[in-house]
Picture (tube, rainbow, N blue to C red):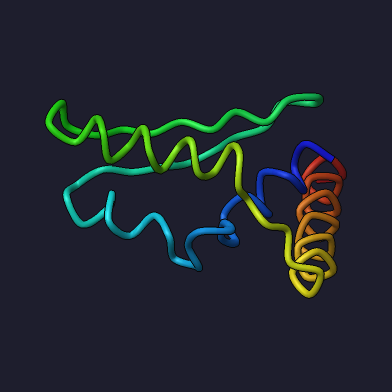
Length: 92
């Protein structure tokens, strides 16, 4: 579930559609995420002068992300493929 949430967080928010993170990337910043077995971590890298822009984006992602139904199936399939490739690597 944590991995599915990670993928879906980047599908847009109630306020902004994909790619909603473009304004941060336009000034050299980045927003990303990773998962552990039970957690999803979202983080941003940005210049000091872009703090307000990054904080607003992070707030939007955390509190207003939408999980479009059509994307859930697609992302589930992607994650299943990632899991299967992990097991393929273990077999080699």
